[in-house]
Image 1 (spheres, rainbow, N blue to C red):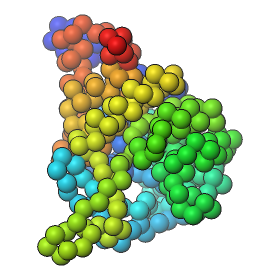
Image 2 (image 1 turned 90 degrees about the horizontal axis):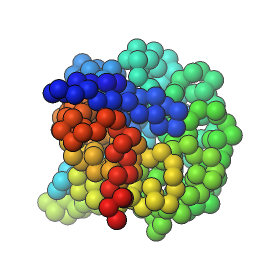
Image 3 (image 1 turned 30 degrees about the vertical axis):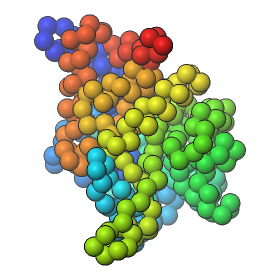
Length: 313
């Protein structure tokens, strides 16, 4: 998409692993529902892409309440992948999503590699996605509940299963709750990932001091919001230097400068998450801000900025 800001036209369009986007700003999984929930408040067609909330083969009720807890500069959540299942998505959500005319990236989860693969097959068979985002932060029930994304081997096992099941672009969403994110990024790339999104939430906890008990019903939850942005930018930087694969930066983006940190660190696109809760139009403001930054600083395209900060080290 070419926009005119001030006196210059700039090209905001990006291509991420074959996904053509009019601009580099999408909405993060789990923060925008299936997109249709925000339609009364936001011009969804302006987004670069929609990333749906996590989808599983069968419906899931999710975790017991309390599920959301506000923290300084962030948010703890313990939703537990509540979703209606792939059949309901196909019947009730997909037709409306397609009407917005932007790429639909479906976030998928499962208890086993085979379940991930089956969700991928169903979505491709029904032309229900332009790309898949594979959430490897889910627990591996066959290995005692350890998250698939916790080690390179289990991460690669899931990615390999999904890759064999679909010809769609496969984006793998990396967890920050690991010792070496670069090793896992390399394993996912070797297993067939076309792009990586990072980061998912950091594991955290809050105590309700009035009740003297854990604030969340599930005790632990995922920390998101501006508090985690420095961690996310650092991980994007590290992965970009080690694995030359398209990256999507996620973590605490609430304005254009936040997004630009990720782009300059190596992200080809970004996703706005928790910021949407405070301002449903946050992603649109980020798009406008990036455009203005490019005009003010003489950049013609987003690709000119990707990884640029590395040249000063």
